[in-house]
Length: 285
Ligand SMILES: C[S@@+](CC[C@H](N)C(=O)[O-])C[C@H]1O[C@@H](n2cnc3c(N)ncnc32)[C@H](O)[C@@H]1O
Image (cartoon, rainbow, N blue to C red; front, side):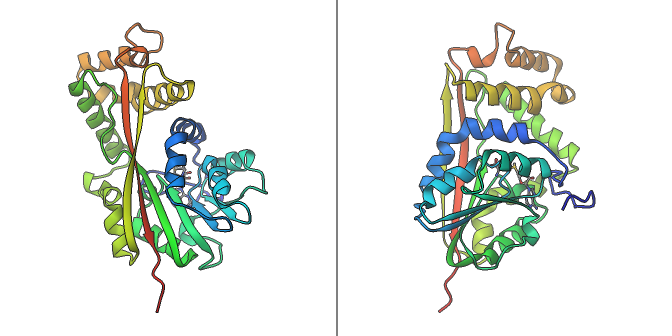
């Protein structure tokens, strides 16, 4: 699995790719809503849960708490660094973490009650293949729960919808150019309900949780927004995609040392959607 020949996914994932810091910051930021989403599944003690594409593993302990006593949680991820990070925060009596490609998971078929997978199927070249692979690991009556951030556009600049729209479009264009994607390549992620129905799952339901923050922010919120979004997702890479004055304004808003820094404005109000789509594996008569 460490071989450099491991094929890259739609968004460039390989066994050697490492964005652990970004994942840790996201999970610290969104922990309250992610835990609410997990609670909405009404898991029971003794259940067996797989976190497919577990990243740095923060959800493993949250899932384990819901299935204790007697339950079991397995985390699985393609990337060596993510697996290492997940193992470092997860004692083996809480969850086991495997390095594997979820499309060919070395796990016993029909052995899980739930496959939890957050912000992963949009990274696969074929989300359908991902859903089918997870389906094989579930017992009849087991559930797939796919979480996806930002099916609705995020609100960053409550006071300036124009700049926000231009920045969102610039980010999309940057990613299309970076991964040679057409907008149509990204539509599957919006259609998770349809994908689960097409894969034959029953009782498909969707629920969206809003991640909402206003100034003053918690340290976890400021760290995620300033570092992951303002600096890494936006930053100088957006310069070619924005008019000069818009780019300069964005840089002022994103600079923690500038008096206009967005996160310290009293009117800062952030919204991001997190959608959980759940389907059940049919029980054959
Ligand atoms: C955006 S991250 C989400 C991580 C985690 N679920 C979270 O919410 O923080 C996507 C993760 O999927 C993993 N991944 C991508 N393709 C995979 C595959 N085919 N099999 C297993 N993991 C994969 C990546 O290595 C990465 O850790």
